[in-house]
Length: 295
Length: 295
Figure 1 (cartoon, rainbow over the protein chains, first blue to last red):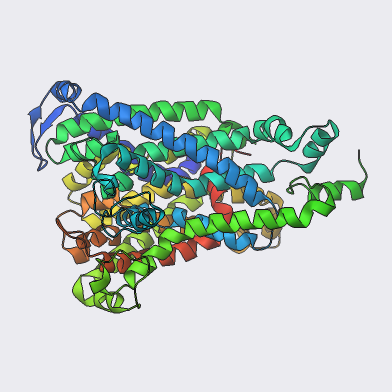
Figure 2: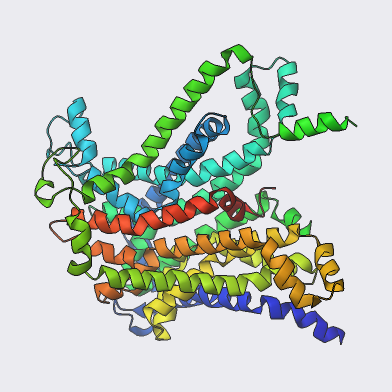
């Protein structure tokens, strides 16, 4: 029967659709629903709350600064990551003895849990005995161990700078590998043609390599934007978003709100989610996923 | 058309960077190698610091020195008696292994079906999968927490299902690519030889897709093992032995002091196995993450 035959794919895809439904789609429904409810810290639902959660959220004095900080966090981390990765990919694309071993070192921050990496840097920045401070003290940059100058994570500005550094550090391996795989797809004769035209190596990089790398850079950038936007362990472990909310991004802020007011936290989640949807739409419209599917 | 010899030369040279005059090459290679070794050391150092700290005697924790006077294994041996680390490793293993099994059972049929058949809804399904790759648990944390606690599902089982759901996309994409690359004729020929459809699938297709299956398996295991935010949210209030390793490690962080020695000893236990596992899938993991976007 043709009608039954058409249902056969459902048998193969059914479990996947069910899993996505339970883990990804239904939580979105619950989240949106919760954002219109009054819910205490223990999760007890006191009733329908209209748009009060959103109103309260928008009136929070920390709301706008947190959103602006999130924007700075995402843009700075992703831009620096992509620029450094372009250089690293170029380096690891060359042939030299021991290339395999050095590439293994490169993947460590990618494979290790981000939480552990964040804790290592939290320790290394300890004002009294942290390794980074000890080295900076020997170099004469940090005048006195244990001073407020050595307390990098106690000052919101320097704390954010260091945490952005850690975020870049853990994002570099994936981004470098993505760009490397893009580099490997560029045929050598393209370079030969450029050399024949008299292009210098820097000029041929700008005019030949970069345009051909565009798809790889684009997808690596967007995956990074999603990751960095949702990043939680780095800030959580290094400053808990404090002092106050002065080093919080919107993800940290949402988690912190959850302890006091689940409804308002859900409202923050919905706003985060809408921002992610905008990013995903940009992603789907700029990439060529459909060609790959239809091939 | 170019001659055959010339075209093989080009294929061989496809992934090599342009080479310059031969006389300058040794020095250039040497400089590149040194730069690469330096980068590798920078990526390795933070994790070596973890080893140095775990092996440092506790009475030297307060001294501003990079290396301790001698190394001790005390932190590793007392790891098992002091906290519930053995229990946490068990919990993390359950979560990671459970999620891996579910992902394989669910992703294999979906990937095979979308690779072999053309049917209505196929593109919509693959789009749904791609979209889930862009959503991380952090974006819908409130919904996930409320859904799973409202249904009264125990934390460990919840974490198995949630980690499976969020790693499904990677597995479906990489397996889809592997199945698509295996010629249908190969299956048909073995069916003619009397293997039958299921026999052909088990004896021909699955073994050929083994590298993809292993990659999906290891990738899911590692990301479930490293997952922190959902684990922290759902296992709150459990005893340390029942919490996953990433959460349990945080028990060494007290309000006023941190037990860095035990923390980094536990951190090594948590990171070294996954770094070794990751080295096996290093070459293929990028294609699974960027599938659908980069050709």
